[in-house]
Length: 273
Image (cartoon, rainbow, N blue to C red; front, side, top):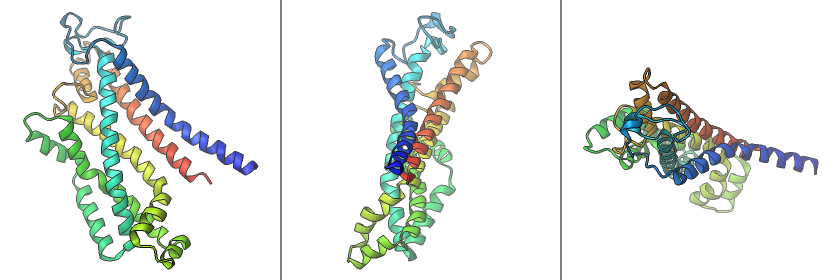
């Protein structure tokens, strides 16, 4: 009974790491709904205005309300990160698990494909692709990130599947005549969710930082609702309006940090004995 109670407390403590990310998403959604101002609405007389009662975070270039911009940009960045990470998980995890369990030529070719994809930085690939697009959008950015998102999941899953392939419960499943697909889905994937959960958070944080970097160099969404566009504004007006850069830096650190914390919480929850 004592051990069960201790395990329950550990699971609750681990799951509490998900709270900051959920709170961040809910707060941004409520702020975006409560504000009547669009993140793209301009008000030239208020350009670079400092924080005030009407605009708690101040104004940016051309009088853009920074609170509206940060809330909408954070929500869109989180949505993009969630979709790309989900794609990487759904494609890479089963592929890597099957390769690690099968071994042989299939595993070698899968890992070589991972090497090929990961040898070319995603940011450079995005620069090359988006530079050729007349009007880059979040759809283009998401597709570019999806091209490489599956590889880390496949590599992690393959490494764990090799270990699980020698376990007694997998050998018992083989002895019972279960097929490889059934073993992967029923026995292997559920037992490698811990390391994969960490990769989900790492992937999501990487997508947020990548989308921010693309917005910073001018290859973000055309509406300018991006944390990277906010950082670009801040660097251009660092001396005139330092609050803009401060808001952008804090927003990026908050989003990426909460995603990493959430992934660590899921990993600890899965590994609680």
